[in-house]
Image (cartoon, rainbow over all chains, first blue to last red; front, side, top):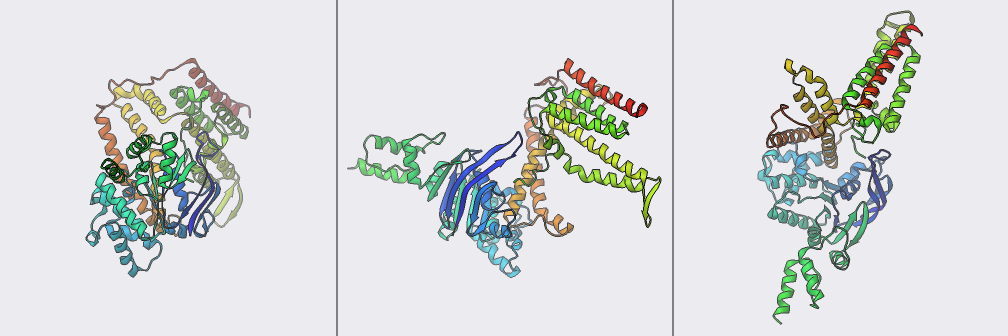
Length: 280
Length: 269
């Protein structure tokens, strides 16, 4: 089971003076229950790409297959695709509308016609998986703190029980602890078998948590590989505008001095290796 | 696909054409002339000439025809409705009648003319907004209304309100698009069911939109106050309006067209 993207092309405002190519021939296979990060600058086409995955945008050329369903405007399975692939937009707290947290999270399962006596179970499951509890049921989502709002918004997508979760810059505007907590929650979801597709401009963030990373630039796939492969690629050559994380720069410098340590972006691992080496 | 892509009505498209670089005052006055002109003629040939005029201005503005014609789409229902009303509610020689509805010769002609006039009206107006940025448009209106300032007419305030409103149309469309997508991703059904059901299904779009609008208004007010904005008195401009010979001649051409065509319409045809 996987999401397959073949030769995808998408152009905004096609045929007008404002024409811009957002996606230019991307090819990718996303396996179920892996953590893939898509890294690129603002305007690189990463958000447009994400919206193809759950049939909010349709391919102009090429093909997107979600499991065995094709993303196509004529398809009768659009709702099924949208249920399989949950999409959390940037600043998802801006889509909150209900009077209570319960109603907010129950919105998705109700839309997918889940039986009324099963909805409570869905809401509870979703709320717990974002680290909140039943005491939130009757609270007004507009009165929650920023971090809580975001968790409720993510729960409101999880309550549809998707197989894949696409998140567009989920850590934007969160402070360091909020960011760490959120990544922890995503790692837990990943453990439970949910495929995570994280879209971010932050290479360091992607390196720290993903199993695979795709770097896109101007709508083209620049590179796709494991964090280690990405690090060694960036350590050897300069890719426009993508900087190695500070930790990896340090590791790289030491390696250039002949130290036998891995090229890594993990501070603790690097510190341990240095201590080992120094205490020899 | 953007869900609201078809709502390009009057959105500014920058190209470097003669029409784009005209003084906004000339364009506003010229458009008013042409709109009046459209209602002054009655002969079919006059309408054809107006369409040719529209085409030549479009050519000069270097915009694709598709874009101009597309801008009429949102108001097509209104145009057809008006034409329809005129067809059935104009008295005259009856063509045929079913029950109490009578179709008259004059009615049909009147309906067609009214439809064409409205269409021309919309096309000329959208040509103005397609070639003039909202800021220029508001500046032009402010300059045109400023003689009324001593009488207490809030020319600057109105222009500022218009600028802000126009400025936020595309932003709010983008926001609406984003919220609609977010709710679709949560399984919302926005385009199925009866009218009442559809209206209800828009609540998840409207409430977040209102929240965002109020937030933006608040932010904007703070941003303006923190830059010491306090109305129009003593404000200078980054791009002062500059009336040149070209503007005078453009205005003259449209005025002559209107006068000539309505004269020919009256006395020759």
